[in-house]
Image 1 (cartoon, rainbow, N blue to C red):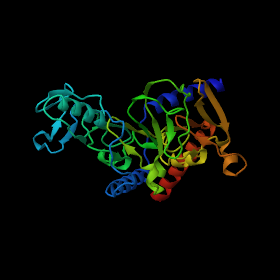
Image 2: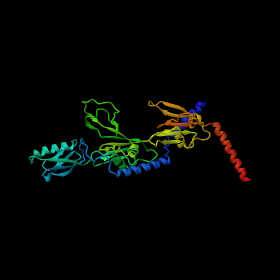
Image 3: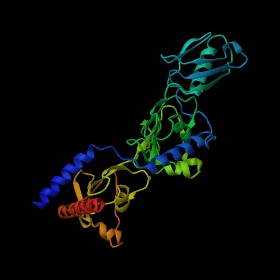
Image 4: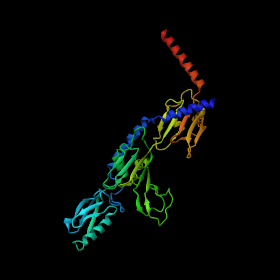
Length: 359
């Protein structure tokens, strides 16, 4: 019967928690404001990456290219690539350029002009604006969406375009930012494409040396190192077509006989221990059964795991203060007997207080 009651309480508690929005502590909101100020301030300072066109960038619709023909100013001009993927130039008409690099366009225009009226044309093509592939900024930012950049930008500059990190209750940033560089056709790195900015170690399977395929590199940047280390290597370059995802903070839950039950975000970018989670939830009530708390979580296969936690022993330093992870539930049961006694004591105090006031 006792287990049935506990099971019912846990079920109702989990159902209630699932309907709750995470509660954001005031210090977490203030921390986000500080981080955004630091981010926007850093965006005003030139980054550690020089602005240059990627060597293998392929021209796309709406890009703006500058065509210069030596000693033929009539043919030199800036032209926008049409939606159909071509540019129109005097003498040679419409020329398809989508999917070609600036160097490949130079060679193509040189050959076409040689076939027309110019004996030995010297053509230079410079990419002035990227417009074909906007940067996608998603996740825990204030203004997620598509942003057009004309040249390479730094990660901090791109985050500033999205007005920095979100400080709302449902989209606080987590520990890292994931940058997916646009897929390119060609030879991928010898091994995978998930790396940190300071280590290109692979986390995916190796690719055969002679295999030609579409591949995309994914780079992981820790938020703390980006904004606190001062090392420019974390301020990685962002190119048109890239996807920047600020991973959202996970949420843990505290339920049962605590003063402020609910969901709480993992806002410190590190970890939260059992006692820290309890403190954030306002501590336990006097009727709480401190020695019978539970941490409820799911393993990688989705199986439910319950770990008994003796909060009294943890407070005394006699037991390990376990970490609370994303989607974990810390449940502190209450004693029905204790609650009845406390209510009786409180009622007695109120009556006694009323008598004293009457007298």
